[in-house]
Amino acid sequence: MIEYSIYVVDDEESVRDGISMVLGEDYRVETFPIAEAAIDAMSETTPDLILLDIGLPGMSGIDALREIKNSHPDMQIIIITAYEDIDTVIAAMKLGAYDYVVKPLYMRGLKVTIQNALETIKLRKEVQAIQEKYIEDNIPCFIRESKSIQSVMELIEMVAKSPDTPILITGETGTGKELIASAIHYRSPRFRGPLITVNCAAIPADLVESELFGYEKGAFTGAVESGKRGLIEEAEDGTLFLDEVGDLSTAAQAKLLRFLDEGQFYRVGGTKKLSVKTRVISATNRDLGTMVKKGRFRRDLFYRLAVVEVAIPSLNQRREDIVPLARHFLLEFKEKFGKKFSSISPEAEKALMQHDWIGNIRELRNVIERGVLTGSGRELTPGALGLVKSDTRETPRKKKEKAGYPPIPPGGVDLTSAMEEFEKFYMAEALKRAGGRETEAAKFLKMNYSTFRYRRRKLGIE
Image (cartoon, one colour):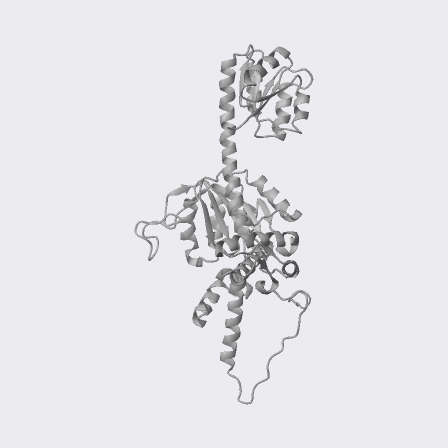
């Protein structure tokens, strides 16, 4: 059973004592003769509910209500008034009071009003518990050791409270932008609704509009006879996450802008305007500002998507989190693979700290997964991780060496075969670094997605 605490703020001692005696059996009750004392006490302990008299000496009940709501917007406050002053009651309700009671107090009715208010609080706490449990179970990557990621999570908690404010998430590949989108969704009022993820780079340009907005019967050759709901419709009362939003075509950008402005759209080939309420979160590892200047992304859409921008720091910018994250992944994968690992050796931790994490959290996770899968014993070592020792390691960012090529042998060289082997090596390496995601692997090699996919199939790269 949840134990609730109640503040009673009234200048009449008999009222305070009477309420305290009646409610004290079921709740923790603290009483105050003036509002200032109750507000000071809230800096130490926050009650679940406040019974607040309107006619107080010093700070009035209305002023106290306003100040409490400014600092604690979700606080449930029941107003006590000596007579039914409609204007005062209306003012209090507009400021966010839950309800009001009139003196002389009818205790049975007061208890019912309090129970109803506390039921609302109970539901809110249950929702919060569900949200926190989801975050804990599914989004553990945001361990709050570094100040940079603490700031990000604080911003997330703040912006998530809005059910429809568009949010743009930026950051390098592998920093966890999709996880951030999930964190926002599951902390928002729409968390019971669906979270629909769209990888804009993975959808062919000529199909983006029909996938996002759906299409009507006969809209184009190959369309399903009954038509199809788009992903925006699927996100009704939830969140639409547009990953790699910088890859949207100009036509899709225009239609998306119209939807963001009006909350309405037409299916491809349709004449009926549809309305959908959903929050749009977008993400990109591109510099949309530069794309806007080059005319490759609509300026008006950029401003509409980035009402709030959440910039995710790279793992190299939050090195305090490397070892805690590695330990978390160690526990995850030792359970998954049934291994006996219990720690990471000091040498391995040093190697992790000094490694250049180009692939960010995704690369770190892959390194730990490989180490746990292929390693043995109870301690994870640098050898199992496959990291070059820190005292001899040279990375592209720290030292650039002139490439050395083998001389042409006497019998000549098959240049086509050599180039194919070169291409296969780097495409395989890019896939490994991108965790198997073709879109990101293509970006490592400065290739577009379609070309990368075509070359991968032709070269038979698994």
